[in-house]
Amino acid sequence: MALTRTTPSLDLAADPAVVAAWVTGWTLSRGTPPPVPFDGGLRVDVGLPVQRARYVLPRFEPKRLHGLAASLSLPWTFLKVCAPPDIVAQALPEGWAVQAPVFMMTASLTRRDGSTEPPRGYAVHLSHDGAVISATLRDSLGELAASGCMALTESHAVFDRIETDAAHRRRGLGSVVMTVLSQEAAARGVDAAVLVATQDGHGLYSALGWDLHSPVTSCVVPGDVA
Image 1: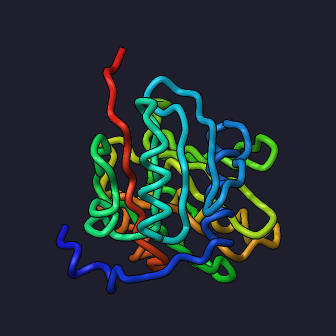
Image 2: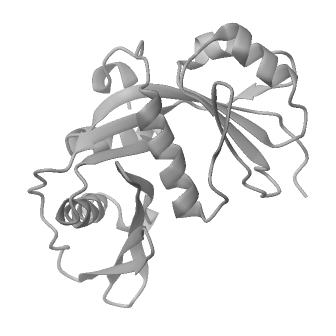
């Protein structure tokens, strides 16, 4: 996918309130402790072997970023910075690895007219767990074909883990998952939505009417994998 044909300028400043909603929704979706504010951003104590903690910075401030990164040395600590990777990399001390760029995207859910009817041979199922709503599509044999979830915060619907199995792609299943979840959010009076997409996912969400809010650069202190 040619990034230059699918995205506008990446020189965008993120809204801290939107970033905070995304972080909060992510913690609800992933079942982690809630985010903890620190000077300049939010910290999530994820507690996984390959993701111990993540620090999210809604604004790119080189000195603040460098100082924070220099103070963190535990392997599998992540920094998420709302800025393009080229400028983030310049502000990092040695020992940090910059990962593939991702994109924070936003949308209004007031009108979502896409089809919620899956293709023939597939069935959609919704489940609820507190503030988290999950959608799954299964084929006629009961095999999972596509899935996704959405966490409802006070201000936003936060979409997460939208996935389609490789054997079931190019059939519109991802669009069905997104539309079903979007309509569920709108029915609950939540209009604003946010997600973070990979470069491949950016094309799908753009086609569904989502807008680029900010590039997000993920950096990590790499370590051995047990």
